[in-house]
Amino acid sequence: MSNDLTYTTYIKTTAEKVWAAITNPEFTRQYWGHDNVSDWKVGSIWQHVTDEGQARIVGKVLESTPPNRLVLSWAAPDNLADESRVTFEIETIEDMVRLNVIHGNFKADSEMASRVNNGWPRVLSSLKTFLETGKALNTWAGHESTCSK
Amino acid sequence: MVAYNALMGIDEDKVFKALGDASRRLLLDKLRENNGLTLNQLCEDHAMSRQAVTKHLVLLEAANLVVTRKQGREKLHYLNPIPINEIYMRWIGKFEQSRLDALYNLKQSLKENDHE
Image 1: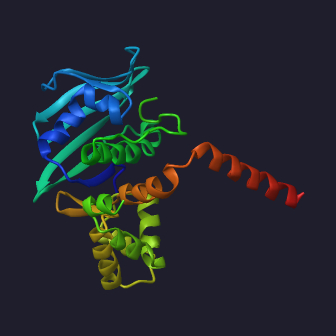
Image 2: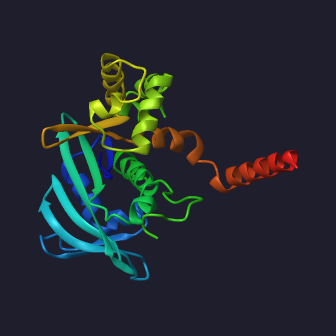
């Protein structure tokens, strides 16, 4: 048994574009609602930041192998002890990309899993639409943002 | 929409076919309760044979509703909600969620009144 959350989606695009979509704030803003900011080097800080400059999620870059693998630690700034880990696996399959997002290493009493469990599918559906059509969905329409709250 | 569906890596028919069976939905329920189960764990408390569970898992994996990851020598099965979210986004997500919530709340309060 494992508490990991696993999300897999197939996107008609290239690995480089998926990498850019995750690491470039100009892109994340459009389909995720906020900016992902870092230099994406191992050991660096990364932050998920609102337009007002407020960090909603913070962590460190644990692994960075563009354009195939990115591992981040993940915590809310007001509860840094509740740290978990997010792994992005970007794999080219013929003319598509398989993107695996694994959110795991939750602490025993973590509140994060229930906070992000509804958020990830919305973010990843929006990412897929963004990359395939150039248009982002209204990711948080009718919902308060869970994973970026 | 047709063009967009053609771009979807997973054949939508596979998702609906996979969901159209009570045993397979039971397996998904089991993973929703406890994610990351081995084949043996999925076979526990099931009236289904190991062969039947294996066959169902093949269809669930083909539909991308279940993904597997190796952990040491074990193969763990995870629920992948993305294809169901795609269905949600296609038919429900475009409507105002708040209106659906309002209808749901109305229905609930009417039900409660019935019980009184």
